[in-house]
Image 1 (cartoon, one colour):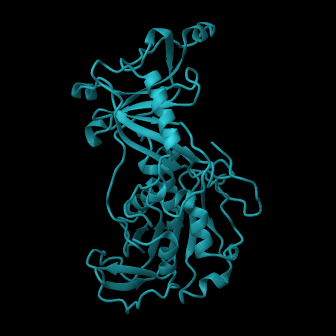
Image 2 (tube, helix red, strand yellow; image 1 turned 135 degrees about the vertical axis):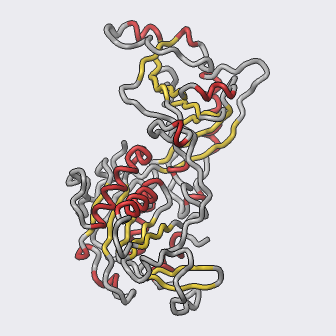
Image 3 (cartoon, helix red, strand yellow; image 1 turned 90 degrees about the vertical axis):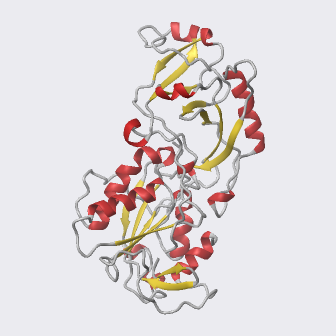
Length: 392
């Protein structure tokens, strides 16, 4: 696999690292209905990128000719960044998709709850794995979320942009790009700057302070029959000396998140983001304070990780088409093709899985040139501001 910079140089045709032959016969995996017609390149391998690809494919089912859709990522697998390291709060779909509903609750000390007259404290039974349940009270969160098994997919992304250099075995050939969607999460500005170094528009993303460490551990006292019940999610900010939430997952694991991280600059590739040892030890100590382990069981870590949330100055997702005038026409002179349309679909902070389907749908509508199904006039960008990213 290539680094982000090398990959994008290849996509632009500006890296003299190989002799690219003329396009051979169409790739056997490519639909004959779209060969030689409109091509859309989506840069990013997370839920926003794949939601965009899905809804674009869905929107053109009845169209001929169809748009060829390519998903590009510099990591060796999809979901290498935040999309693959989240709690996965998605709608309940136990029968169709193996997802489970969730009981989400905020926890406080009893004396604090009792001072809040008229509240809903105490209406929720705390799970058996939560230590010292008699000292605390809980109330349901005011939103209905559903947790599930975390999304994991080792599918390989297909390198593909103006013009796209495609690889099939040892053979390379080019594909023209008509639409480019930057959906690369916190790497989005780096992608933009590499593709269009003279662009006057910028994405003001926080690439230093937006990360968080997490653990996935074995659920104390888990039994397979537990999967027949809803998963549990507890927010413990008010009872521990540090923000923390715990979410059980199907199959006997639980996700420990919201801890935060020491500031560290975003690396070039998502696979180079690793958990910070000091944070891991701190999370383990908090787990021992909060969790009740049956006799003979100990804290067992399944996975430790860290990911960067795609946070932008505006504090809301950026879903928009970028005028060619802001990209500087000289940036297109190397391709020999008509300048492609460029779109942003990024900046979703910690809500990528929640907002991914809707964002993908309206982005597909923008690409198709139809009126978006919802008003997205407030989800633009301001290329003249130079403030730091706004945290969620």
